[in-house]
Image (cartoon, rainbow, N blue to C red; front, side, top):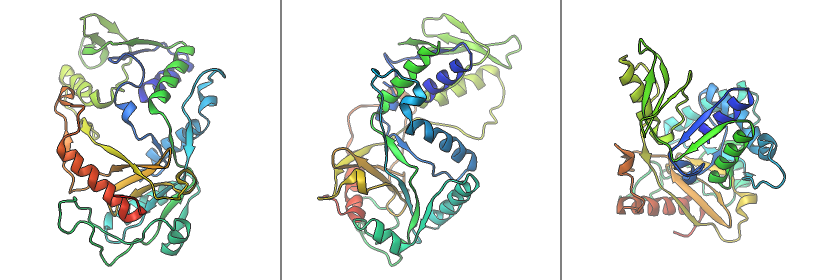
Length: 335
């Protein structure tokens, strides 16, 4: 999505662009497995600015794409979003304070719910607290503490895209209409530099052929850290970057929703620091849930992307069961 969106905006600005993708079509990489949540909850004001601007494009997706009527496009489902306040977790209130500050600076409307408002607005949601998050094999798993949830920050400006792969394809098609060029099943094996090797001047493809370019945009997703390291190593300069990325495998689960609840109408996207999870509606009548990577969960970083295996190992199955039962704690689902 990011790479295709860059290509679209650059092409619309009159730039000549070439997008190189090792896959056979748009969105066939990690994008296709995205939870595709569109949110404006960010503690850094610059991140919040980007999200707020992007939100309107997602909400009016066909118009942003300038797509013809016959083109199939992904759909945005606005659910609202809620970040729960967990008094037992000090970092929870610190994060919420920063989120509130960012949203107030940008004049993004939100509501600050107390515990009574939380119970009234989401009666299916338990306000018991189980912090800290624990794995299901911990003998204290599911044990309540005395704090309880004290409310949260809610905004209506949150939702999800129903098909992230289609959204990536929509962006590629829009970019092509604007004049962008794409090459599929094409990988980058190296970079080109200027004569003094202090500036990237293009890329080398896996077949050895060079592609010169005054600007190279690194939008390689899980590959981006390797491309970044390649640029720094080839230039022979120290890497003073303050932000780095590493390929990191995570799993999400789809579980049955509480009986009798119209999820798309009644459930917002919820960030639950108390249990170390997030969840959102998943049509029809289900809940998609994933981890916030609490300390109890093992971290699965990939040294090489070829290390990725499509099967689900037993350690992940345990995490999935934990996520299901944690959602049961707060959403009365079936574990």
